[in-house]
Length: 392
Image (cartoon, rainbow, N blue to C red):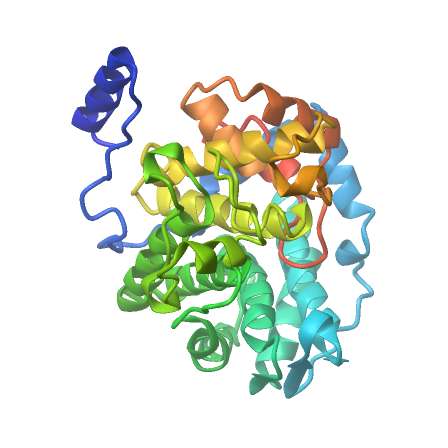
């Protein structure tokens, strides 16, 4: 955020009203992309590596957890297929789990390469990426957009680290880029009118892919959709009596909005569109918000000090409070919540607490309780290692 924006926010705080300024052109692509620059930067990688090599906690424990996982297995055999078919809740599941897990494995091995400098891990990451880029042509069935978003969130994180830090060569990097451009990007770039976690995950993938492809047009389009969807996913009291909506969804009455918000008719700051569905899906949405904000910051435009960051902070705090076991009022989801937020708090907590100085007591307690944060086996992986108390 520009200094004038910080001063305006400070003045508003003094006045007793917090009004987050919106950074001018905040969703505009950078003139020159930063690499590696999808969710984790060179500086963050260097910080994590230094902590692991020094045996410092929680990073060493997080690294050990990662290296003991199935995703770091150098004997892993990739399982690509031409058409990945995923129905609702992955039924049918023709390549869905294989694709997501191979993508996470590619990222895991890229991180292992960076920390150990053992070329075997870089070559394993390349093998996984090459196997899929040689075969896949399409995603089909009802969950195709979400599946593409989940796998497409992990692939560019791996590719960025390998392409820009491994000097051993990646001859098929161009073919991998073509896969992302032709198979993944068209499936996700136009968004979704489904639940918020769908579109947020899809935009996370679209932003990451755009960085790897250095595609400014797609980056701008994805960021604009992300800003709109984030505002419609997390409620703030400043929104008014009803949550914001995505215009294309035609949620033009209170009844339609309440129905879309899982029957919740009382709106309080930090509530998300899927809180009353379950915390697991809510965690997907919160995670995607934090990942996109982190990528945007690496690319030179920090959204944490804007409305996006405030919604992320409030969503984390609200969900963390109940995940920790606080009593649920009858006005919230009928007094009953389906918990299970997942390993999704590290990135947002680091940004909002360590960088911007917010206390975030509940989020801090939950984050520390869950360390080392592992993988949700969909698109989240090893964020205690990469983002815990990371100043870079």
